[in-house]
Image (cartoon, rainbow, N blue to C red):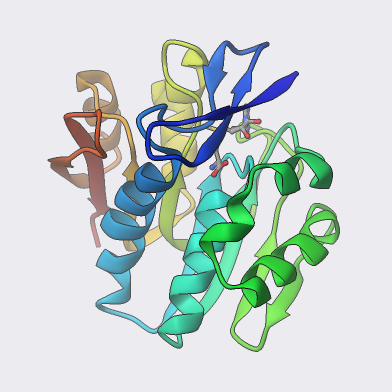
Length: 221
Ligand SMILES: C[S@@+](CC[C@H](N)C(=O)[O-])C[C@H]1O[C@@H](n2cnc3c(N)ncnc32)[C@H](O)[C@@H]1O
């Protein structure tokens, strides 16, 4: 059962009773998404290229996706977005998050009307963007595609340790292109060692409000 819960910046998140954790930072769902994934991930890569493919781990409510889509449409960036989700939410619950208020209506409508179809096959949302949400676990996921960015947005190591094992991190990183960027809201010594073992250069960046640090890592060429 997922319960809609307000966070400190006024945006909502979901509390997952089974896992015992929120989908986003309780200090602010919207500001975390903007800081970690849009600011440290998308904008960092968009400074260098005009066509971007993203692999997200954990589609959840789609908050990271709608903010990414808005940024790419505004900046004329071709976006190919693939997001793995083991437990897709219903369209009705996603609509109750109130996230439609954070993007233009055209962006929201193109997301919500294509969401269920994207769980089955890739969908074209505009001349510039595609969305695909493979309904599977990260461990079972495979694709010949390689991506420019990974948004690693799994539940925390305390609540879902299997999503932070060395093996699963290496599996996720195998889908990045050489020079590709991995971003996540978390940073631990174990995660840094796992990423370094995959030939990445690591940066510790200031975290979203309420978190001291976050991780960005760039894969060796
Ligand atoms: C922290 S939430 C992601 C929040 C999401 N990015 C958003 O903007 O709402 C973690 C997500 O990972 C999904 N998940 C849990 N186990 C998974 C697995 N083994 N493989 C892929 N996704 C998983 C959960 O269902 C949940 O949607």
